[in-house]
Length: 211
Image (cartoon, rainbow, N blue to C red; front, top):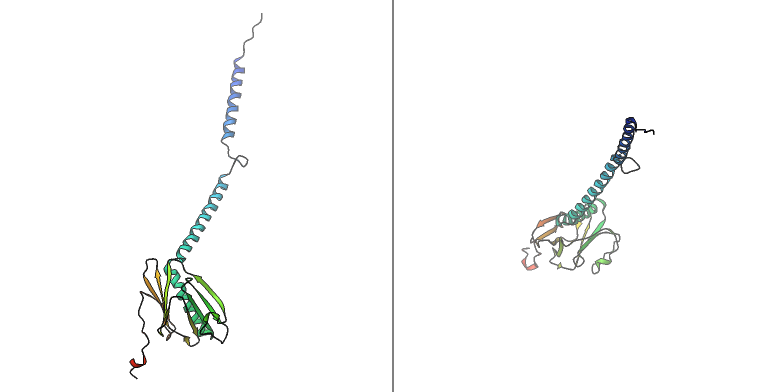
């Protein structure tokens, strides 16, 4: 009877092969390549794109909020009227700013006809240049003209080469119901924003005049 014993070298070789397979499985499990997922560079690019979109969204929202503030809206109306007065002086054209207190809006129109309808100013031929609606942060209250006429519906300010047809004021309220006045000066073409519902000089009756 012959007995053969397993040689120690064979046992050592088998254990080494087992350990080698374990190392390969471990290395494969924690190796990041193009087939198993994103590379570090790709992840950085994705994060950069997401950050850019977030930044653009914040800028857009901040711009909308800033545009809707009382100061921004009143300044835009003042700038529109100033632009009309300046353009009329430089080009000799006539312009009309319509203040709609019911719709809480205004528009700038270039008058394209020599004929102006005094009783129906909304029918005066013209080309609309700009329109804008106000928000609840900026509310039109009433308009007063320097000839003593006031309105809380619609008002028209016209300006030509020689200046404003009528002066007056546009009274607005902010979100805290504080009053402000956009003053239109017929003498020097100036349009300014003043705090409060300021009192302008009212026209005097004939019997009040000294001469």
